[in-house]
Image (tube, rainbow, N blue to C red):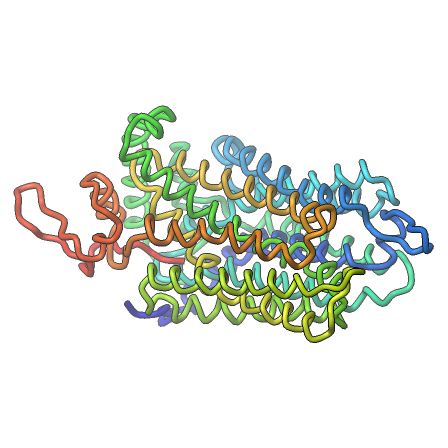
Length: 511
């Protein structure tokens, strides 16, 4: 299969691209928020204001505060993602963007003004999570509904790239402010969080509502007006074909919804298999412990005594951007199962080696400089394997497995599993690392949990290149083992074998 195709008419689609970029501000908010707090945790003035004083007069963040403050945001994100559904249905995508922006701005202000109060700080993290969760649940929906088919693939990929770029920016901001000898060292990164949702609020009055949402509400004229605004750059644009396609899709989904029930996800073996595959991929994406590097990268680097922990953290996101870019452009040239099996083995070995190096710590818990550097290098290797494989493939797999009449329900369950697993990993990491005194030997734990990824890749991942949504639904209905998906010939209703992998009708758009 070929790599990413970018041979499109960008000039004729520049207005649509602009609206997609507005929606992608949600990705920037998500990326920046997940990273700036990683660096803030390692700042001396933050520890002085929110930490505990030791017997030697130094300050350090308590394990409970470290765990709760980093993980509680995912509770907010889960609630925000759930709350986005009724807002989307009743008031549209722009209403979710408005609500999410307000939540993040209020949360950022409360966080910056918490002045050492742990309960107030926790509340601020939940508020920010509410906004980020709403963005996460809606931004890709809006982009998918607004972007013309010619740019939909690149536009959806833009979401992930912007998330990675904002993470790098957040790491650079932390590196620039961490040397300030006052509380401004951490308040500046906190306050900058209001910039992105502020830009969203300024852009919303000029951003059209989704034409798909208008059609769901029976507002055909508003949908046509929205399509014309989105495609204003294309002088020859005629909305007739698009409005008919949207109308047919809406009618088809309404027909499918009649047979969609929560109970069928458990009682129907076909739907249960889809649910297991979709939820499973979001589970294994996080259970391998990748969030430890992202959430606690700075304090981890400080704990093993390596120099320049903020620089080390910044390098993580440089590697992420490069690896994600390579994966998007060239990753599809490799078979999906092969990619996941090879990279999950690489993650397993790198994590076990980190744990092995951790056993060399001295009685006082210190590590030699060479061992510390080795652990950092292996962490980079782990991150590269992750981002080339499950980090970029998981969302596509979850989307492809969520086919048929229960698509929305399966997708919701998969995202719920994602948030719960992230919360679990972020919450438990400090207790294992500090309270249980594992230190870098935590690599043994995550090496063990990465076996879930290896098992999922072997038993649950099939090749879907060239398959349409209807094809994948038929693979489930025919109960084809995943190892046969690549070669299975789908029989037609009249008994003839018509469709093989590689046909050109209604290919799935991978992002």
